[in-house]
Amino acid sequence: MAIRLKMGGYARVDNDPLGRSFVGYFPRMTEAEAWEVGRGMWRMNAGKARRQRFAIIVGEGLVRAVAEISAVTVHGDRAALEGAVLAEGHSVRDVLIGQPDPVVNRSQNPVGYRELLVEKQFVYRLCACGCGGRTDRDFLAGHDVRAIQARVREHFGGSQLRFVRWVDRQLATD
Ligand SMILES: [Zn+2]
Image: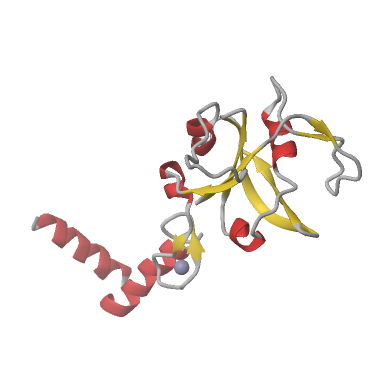
């Protein structure tokens, strides 16, 4: 899932915990500006926000920035996201940027959540080697080799030659 944060209108702020002098949407803002404005300060469930990988910043109904969340900081009854704006070329950013707000509901809450089809390939899942680790690929780094070696040990007496010959036989009989 991704979190969507809807910017309000442009307004100056004093004593902002994030050190900003203004918040809110203004025309022709850059994606970096939209992220800096949109990442805080929100009344939101910090735990739920932390479980999201991507943040979508909306202004005047359109997506103005997409970022990857690295942390959530809590400031009193409000919270803010830390992270990095996704650059042009990242598939999640490219699909969403400039598009209408992906969270469609009757709620006035600027904080919303949405499952995104495009993020599926980036969502963490269990490593296929069975180690219990989490990864956004099939395997954690090096665990593909480990998974193959474990099978060579278990089924081929540790002989890679027997494994290779077995694979070749299987393919030949197809
Ligand atoms: Zn693993």
